[in-house]
Length: 356
Image (cartoon, rainbow, N blue to C red):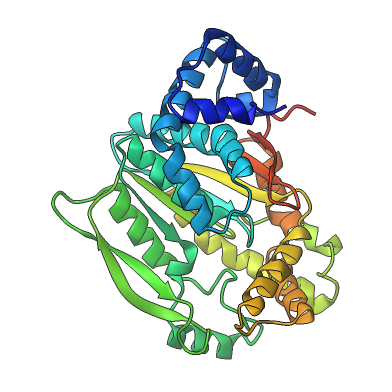
């Protein structure tokens, strides 16, 4: 059950919630035990939490829906429901965590292609601004090694045919960046590295960095942000497309390279994970995106090329081996968001506390 759209529309338009409406919504919130646990909503604080969310909905609702249109959201009713049940409580929780720190907060966002991590980061920044918190977004893509460095890396290991897997990033640069964001110097700008994916015919290269003032909250997103190495024994019976001995060797080598990223993940204060209910959906979403791009007259990959591209990253860091532990085991991520094939939210929960 979701909150009636007519109710959200009235509240967004500035109408004060009636006591019976608040009780109705509180019952809905508490009825979804997984989400209530994830956002720490209880019978004791529930009404206050809902009233706070209503106030924020009235402040930011119109702007968020306008932002959704720039991200090609086709269903504004769905966007409004997502705003209420996910984006607003998540932003309020992040703001609450920041208020407990005497330094900037680093929020990790893990999500594969098509999971909406870029949209989520943009919406969160807008809402956090209304809560008087400055923020910035950085991507693990911004930490890629230079084109020349990656060319040399590929000569050393021809298996690194695409940028993206562990080993293609400047981890030390990322550590220095997060440290400077966590402990900024007074009256001193911070240099944010940026990456131009279009350079060198799509191979990409570093571009001019962005100078920003110190911020309260950093949203650090990427397709394997927070992912940890696994026991190598799992590769003996790994799922497809890890099939051949060469595949298993590549998976083991990638797993080993992942260890270098652990000091970077240690700089995260929180981690949330966006993941499809079936990891195969990422391939479908990539095809949909490619088809839309080609419909505008641009060139793109054929379906088989897309399948090979996605399978390459599954061979590097298979979702069943590397993402599943994060969304099932306690203590690795604070929030997990499961997505259906149409990208609507299946459930929100705190790993380790999910109701089965």
